[in-house]
Amino acid sequence: MKSRLALVIVLACAAAMMPRLARAFDETAAKERLGVRVGGLATFDGLNDAYGNGWNLSLFFSEKLSRHLLIDVRIGALYLGALKFTELDDKLTNQHGIEGSMRVLYLTLGPMVGRSIAGMYSVNASAGVGIYSVSMVFSNAITPFDLSDQKFGFNGGLGLARRINAKWSIEADAIAHYFMITKDINDLYFAFTDGADPPLIAEATLGLTLDLR
Image 1 (cartoon, rainbow, N blue to C red):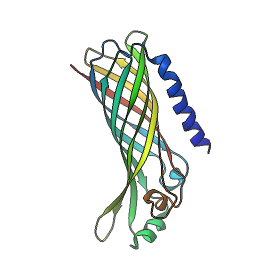
Image 2 (tube, helix red, strand yellow):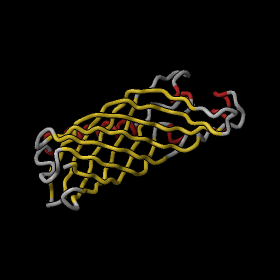
Image 3 (tube, rainbow, N blue to C red):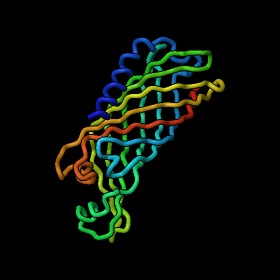
Image 4 (cartoon, rainbow, N blue to C red):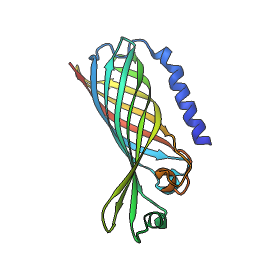
């Protein structure tokens, strides 16, 4: 409950900041930007008990619609460790000694606004909605296989960027993810977390952005 309240607060702060931040995002930025982010992630709401924390990798593309507003498209992967409940995947797959790990792929779209500060620095706030694909990857199986299940979810975040030349910027971001589940054994996430609540996943990343001029 506390972690979900924290997510609501983060997203509310991002939404509240958007009108105030919507000034000059980065006056020297190109209309289109392409970038990559990598970092660590922390999990909550039972997901941490089943898999612990992990790391993430994402690609993003931003299109400037106005001096104040960008559309941000993100494609990412959240990598979690092996299932800690060692007997659970054996039971669900009817295979002894099998080892499962969880991956969450996502594609989201949403607005981003920001403001230049202190010369070469800028801050931004973003929000996105889209599809989260929960996958289980198994090793030590008689026949290697995986399972996947698609969910609706959303994210929100805050970032700080520094321009290093006419084309490149470096950035640091904090982003929270949340997606819906069905509390039913047929729900892949619910089954392979032994009945965890809908997850809150928080990531802290470093990134590199290229202006497409």
